[in-house]
Length: 96
Image (cartoon, rainbow, N blue to C red):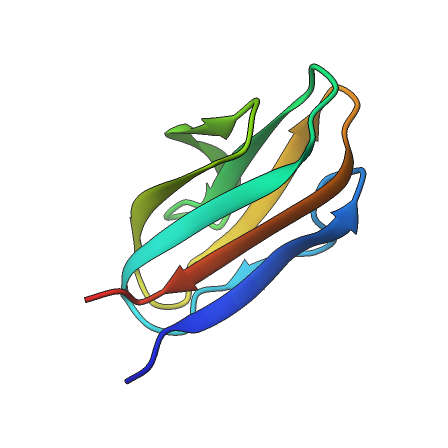
């Protein structure tokens, strides 16, 4: 199965609009770039009771990428802190 790409942010200057559902369990690469202006982004996911919570260590204050594991059906969101602009972010996977 080829990797899929979820577009979390596209030319954004705020938190991602809405939640994005992970289609297939596995490893995903979260990548982000743009003008951070001293701001940052934290990736959040739903927990066992459906409440969003920060994923420990899944934050960026400069362009970067990291690998994360998600179960199928997990809902994720990129949350902004501070002031950013022209932000782009994707989750690509599953990567085998």
